[in-house]
Image 1 (cartoon, rainbow, N blue to C red):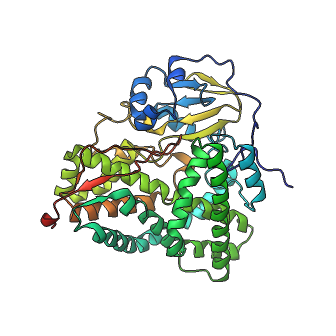
Image 2 (tube, rainbow, N blue to C red):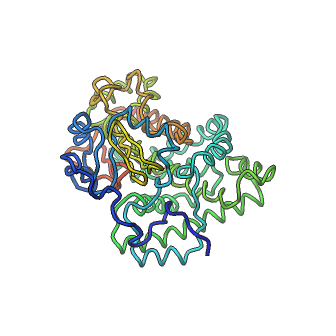
Image 3 (cartoon, rainbow, N blue to C red):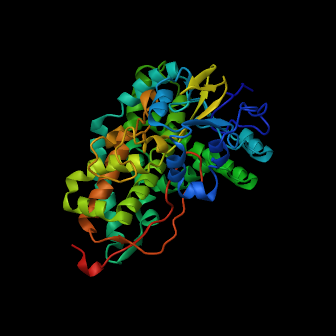
Length: 439
């Protein structure tokens, strides 16, 4: 059996560590207060960010055995130095797999290897140019009319009802259908892959129980099998889509990347291409409808919507934290970080840093520098699918503003969020309107 990488998706074995890297590191007030899987933090991490950012911009967390980075400039500094701060741990499970889950993993024929989000920088640069250059505006523009048709069809299903649960009835499925159109995958598998993707977020970035780990690892086998079949079909008959473009590039020069690497990129894109968009759109609509004034501004002036998308990604992005690991002894803002030390980049905190964003706790759809947000990453690993995600969120907002300008949140509802270290998304969003007043 080939040696597997020390870090990576599903590569966390029971008791695979030699103890906390930060053992003996002084624990400060911020380190004691940082409990990222607590109900309070999951519900509103921004309160902790505001209370801690200036007092302790970098601190050690014994709870997670990592150094936490909170200020915008320091987050950017880590992202810009992938040689010192390796992305190898980006998809490494937060909680080590239990023995039973590791056994399931080892039985599955899953050829996981580092790909765009967690491979070392030199390899990444070469692959990013190939896969990123194929992510052309032409391809995104081709998809937009079909995405608008899908959004229209979903709104048609509930517009006369006077109420809807937007996540379950709209936002859950639309981004999955959009990425499948873009990739050239069959629409009838989109919901299945969406369900598997939601579980992938928990197994890698959540804190699942032993039983949940075992179930989720079995589901990952089904997701991988679908990916293999998708690639095999594209190799036989490449379509006029992104995956077809990649197959044609492979045929021109197989030395650029392997078939297994292509499988890994498609496995990644099936998750990253929809789960994050669902959550960002849900978070944004919740904020717009909670305060109402920003929503009314979009109704009055829909030309603000593209910038409102950027403000959503700043104010309450679906990816509000990401991970790195130090390749050598170093420091961040004067805080020593040992070789092997894990770093948690709190982009959600950086996105509300008053040194960068005026009045950062206010949602302003016309904010001039909203696009400086870190909601799509930064530097060499900036989100490759950003144009597609932005387009989908824009279309969703445009159609809801146009067809349901009088929509409002149902009162007294309780909001719950996905329980992970890095992803944030409201799980249901109940709205209502006077159907007799529909435009």
